[in-house]
Image 1 (cartoon, rainbow over the protein chains, first blue to last red):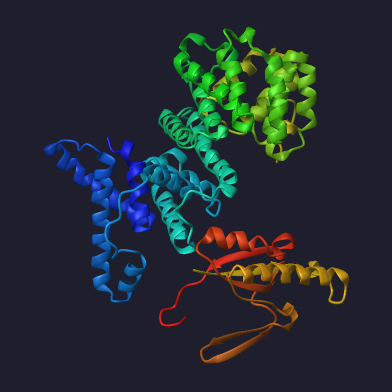
Image 2 (cartoon, rainbow over the protein chains, first blue to last red; image 1 turned 60 degrees about the vertical axis):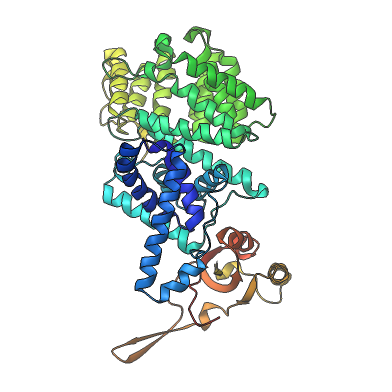
Length: 416
Length: 119
């Protein structure tokens, strides 16, 4: 019930009291008060403003009490504009942006930006965030406290970055939203393949950002990408909980309205003629998600888009995806050439999808023993259970002679 | 708010005095501090003598222990500082990025605690 108002309330109170940690605690308290008061007196007309106003009083009250206790801190209160007459609740949209730019500030550790955004912007509890990242709750709590302390001590400003810095800072914010989504879409460890609640949070954030920054096509591009990929969620896992390859998915299970919205958004974003990695990825996702069948997928277009994406993001993962697309257009040997040319990259060697892609192409070329070795290399990286089951099934489909591991032998391509 | 920018550079990466490269580094630092002074953010700045001139002092049980050399042997050594007065971390980082040491070594930006009763 309060999630929908959390972002606005925390943002407004942070501006008013000048401290994120204090603002967050105060909004938490205000929510507790609201549970009682709203039940008795009904939900107020503007719940966010009610929460922000109540939280602001609580925060200032705490400050006053604290200051009375210690004489020295009285000066700090004055400095923190606590004694000024109450300012108006103010421009909410700018506050919301300022808050997410604060949580995603590049001076904070990259991993903690995601957690802090989930806490301060989305209003997830520390326990929920800890569960999503598979780390103990006290560890997560400590990380969040440390991040908020750094914001205060280092003087990280609460503001929308000036135009000259906006593009760079926005890409950091979009990256955080994207990571929230991928954390949900493919839990990086453990057995839950999808955490839909994180996917939904990411879409909510992307939608808000696209609305707040209509002039930024990458924000719209990210929203489109998430809608298009998430639209296929129900086809990704079958009733037995097993992962289903894109080409084998039942397209009738896809969320067609969501896919249509994403496809329309990517077209609108691209019309601004300022392409970026999220818009291009969204265009690729649109090719997949709007194809009537796997056989009718426009791989030629996809291979071209990946070539464009490599220019923006020259990473091994993008190149590996390009290889798969090229294999569809020019045949498995062409794709395998690209993959093998980059097999020396150690980061890539630790990425299960790289080995799965190699295995698939090797299998199509009839090089079954090498295909089996590549599948085993992927298995050795302990992917999530559903992926593990998928790889095991593919291994079973290879001829018996190919499935037997060579003497003494794990695959060489698995890396250290 | 004050920020102390600590310049860490591998000493063998610093050109020898008298060479044209040394002159270029000095000029670059002077240009950076002139811009900072012009914007009113520079409180103080100076290069430090090499670590071979450092002496480290520790007092334990009232006994003074002196060590020839720096507090810690690092690949990149503290070689100078800039003390800036900025509105927030973003401004401090923007100025720190103009310090030439950031290109050959690292610049650590640390907020300075305001001590009551002193300016």
